[in-house]
Amino acid sequence: MTAKLNSSSQTTFASRREPQRSRIGIFDSGVGGLTVLRELYRQLPNESVLYFADTARLPYGMRSAAEILQFGFEIISWMVQQDVKMVVMACNTSDALALETLRSEFETPILGLILPSARAAVVQGRRLGVIATPATAASNAYKRAILESCPSAKVWQVGCPEFVPLVEQNRLHEPYTSEVARQYLEPLLKQRIDTLIYGCTHYPHLEPVLKKILPTNVSCLNPALHVVAAAARELDLMGLKNTFGVLPTRFCVSGCPQEFEQTSRQWLGCTPIVEKINLPKVSYRSLPLSSVE
Image (tube, helix red, strand yellow):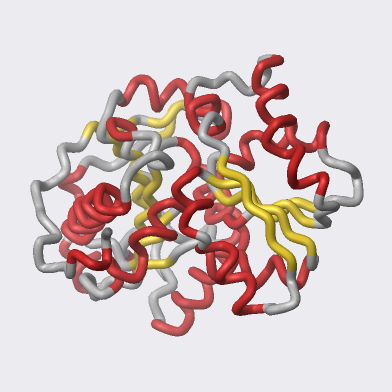
């Protein structure tokens, strides 16, 4: 099965006059954001989507804050050119390091994963473990957001540098992946966590591996559910829910389209048609340097 997609030239005059008809932009470094895309299909089946994977520069989890901010600025600038009505930042690292700065630069609504997930987590449990990229874990963004919602919660975080490459290389079923997962989860299990937060959108793809290691009393929280629910509320508030026909999802990458097609097929249930995009050369020079150091 092949997913049919529109070309970049097919942003219609009607969509510019009727913002409800515009697509929602979703971006991530790779296939991790597909967990958000699938949830958007489930919760918002009438919405059209532009999905961008920055595969030429993944993984993001070892990048500096300045790099993450520059990448986000380029991607959102391009998405605005494509007439999206909202951007969902399906990358926890980008959320942790750049969300607030990028929001100040664009009029288009930009949603992140961390705050809605933190609010949901404290309803679900009180001893919370977070697995995330090293950059997200080092930022303490999840811990701060959780403690703001519930000061009495206990939070432990583990940076997991190998998870994203293992997912992107489609090595989910190798014994090595299970071994790495056990090492990452061990310090959290020693703290008797009751909830595990997937602090990277790639990690729900690892759930079959993680569930074999976690005790049955530990529940897992997928931020995709909660960011899409937040997107639905935002669209309602702005009067931007789509009331027209749904456009085919448009998939774009900065790296090799064929690699993304092959890797994403197992989670999409079809083979997407993927465009290679050269992002515009834009700079965030107008932003204060203190925000990225």
